[in-house]
Amino acid sequence: MDPSAGGGNASEGEEPPLTEKRIDWPAEAERIEGRLELLGGISESDGGLDRPPFTRSLRRAMEETSRWMEEAGLLPAVDSFGNLLGRAPQEGRKPALLIGSHLDTVPNGGRFDGALGILLGIAAAEILLPRARELPFAVDVLAFQEEEGARFRSGCLGSRAFLGLLESRDWALTDSRGLSLQEARDSFATDGWPRVEPYSREGIFGYLEAHIEQGPQLEALGLPLGLVAGIVGQERLLFSFHGEGGHAGCVPMASRRDALGAAAEFAIFLEEMARQQPGAVATVGELHCRPGAVNVIPKQVDLSVDLRHPKDEVLDRLSHRLQERAREIGKRRKIQVSSRRTDRLPAIGSDRGWRERLASTVGAIQGKAPQLWSGAGHDAGILGRFAPMVMLFLRCRRGISHDPAEFVSPPDIACALQAMVGFVESFLP
Ligand code: GLV
Ligand code: MN
Ligand code: MN
Image (cartoon, rainbow, N blue to C red; front, side):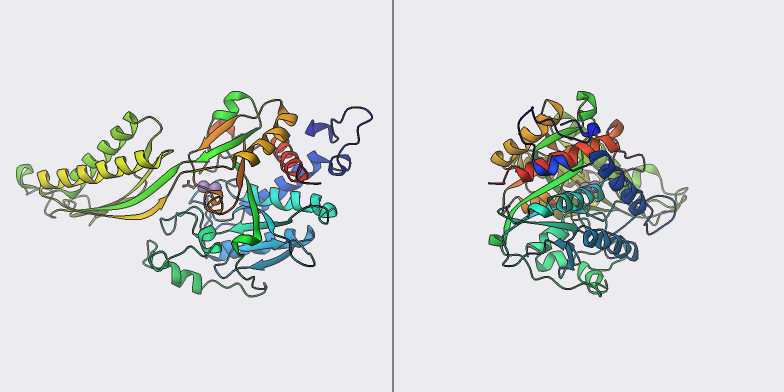
């Protein structure tokens, strides 16, 4: 299956699958690229792509995506959280194979993270629609919001809501301006779309997600596609260090209780701890220093921690060590330390049988089907708790993601689409 040839690789005399005979894969990839370009211009602010959940830009992105869903023959609808669904038309509903990803981005993000998986899903659903009756499931496409967790510091909230997993403490999460998730959701207008009832567990056949790799491994292997063996577990915490403010010129060093000094020591410990633990990554991504003036000793520092590891027991251990060390630093420096966990997502493996199916279509396209762990969280990690889940990674230029430099080439997008269609076709009787 050479995508650039626009045809199939069936040997002579053998009937290629219908979908292969009539698809111009490079043209499909160009269409997806054009849509990515358009979505990449829908941002909350100028100068970099920033599409937080429950904002006007997110709504505009939903409107465009909804239009493409309709063009593909899908029926757009929203759920009570504000996730967009493109549902396959069908009499007497079969369980759904959900293909999805997310429409929200991190601040100053890239245009492929999330959006690419949704657009690949729409293209795959359109190609597969003529075979809908023969498939044992309906192919529905999902565009989640607040996967990144950049606004409420808790990831995959849209997919958790889709499965009815949000608890009252999740709805009470607040953004940096103090607005709660509940308030943000309630003020988000979804007029114009029909409301879809939550899917029951029996109504979900499985979940497929394609995503930019966000790392350098496929590029190093010289391959467009990889399979996700599993998604690492992650924990997010907020630490507050409370010291004593004072005049930067007059308080002697020996008597200071500088909150930033304690926070800095803590951040260095966190980095060292993760370096010494194979497979671990740890990041302080937010840091607020108050009152934040050049001539005032910092009185309070709040910082976020994002901690990840493929094994939950290691994650627990690291998290415990962090909290212990924060207490120890606080005691020694006479700084009050408090912490609170804002998120915990357990590690999850993809479905072995589905991975083998996808490996055979990927292998037919590029000869090999490497398996990688995902260091990023994905909606697939939530859906995979209740139904078979499989993920496809696309090669990422220089491994860069969560940055405007993010890039996936159109030929790689063509390969991914072909792999996804091949995967779905493998369920044909
Ligand atoms: C999402 O991209 C995450 O893993 O933080
Ligand atoms: Mn993503
Ligand atoms: Mn992301």
